[in-house]
Amino acid sequence: MFCFSSNVSAAELNWAQTLEWVKQTLPQSTELDFNKKSIKFDGCHQRDYQLTFHQKFGEDISLDTQVGYLKGELNWGAHNQKTTTRQWAILPRYRLNHRISLGLGYIRQMDTNLETSQGTDIQLPASNQWLFSSRFMLDSQQQYVEVAVSKALWQANDATQSWFGEERTDKHINIVYVANF
Image 1 (cartoon, helix red, strand yellow):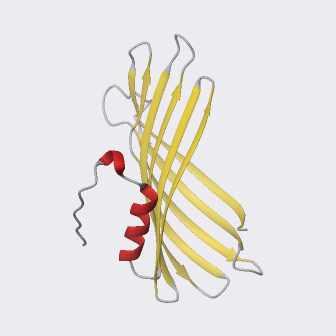
Image 2 (cartoon, helix red, strand yellow):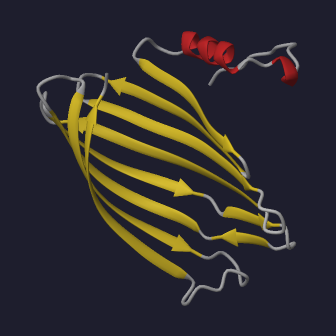
Image 3 (tube, rainbow, N blue to C red):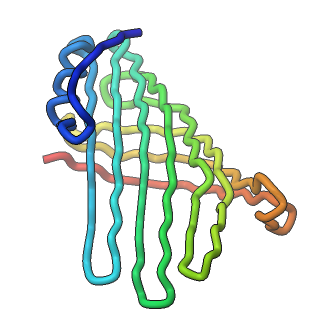
């Protein structure tokens, strides 16, 4: 646990400086990153904020976590809408050898809020997702192939979210090639 105090107002807050300060307080083996992505064009504006944390515990065990917030707006005359969603994820990973690692993780996406210009406010169901991941490093540490199996459960929380049976399951097998430059 760590605490700090500051006299800086919210309007003066600089995310890059704050992130650097937090990084300095963490151990050297910790990676912390904040990504802000945005796209904007006529009638559309979408923002995606992601805070990621990676911590190694020895040579073979690591922990990846992520907290995210997405916000979007569509402005098409009488058919305007706004949407927001939040999610967090945790993925412990165990390295079997220098080429293969396994991870078992959990992703929680909170209720997505959808507001329309017609006055409708819809709460889309939340999801809980379990993920098993196998990562195979290629010739360099900059390239790998990841095979992931996941199962997500989308569950309505109240009577206004009347899905047939109030829950759905979504299963995936993903194969991803990653090359970092």
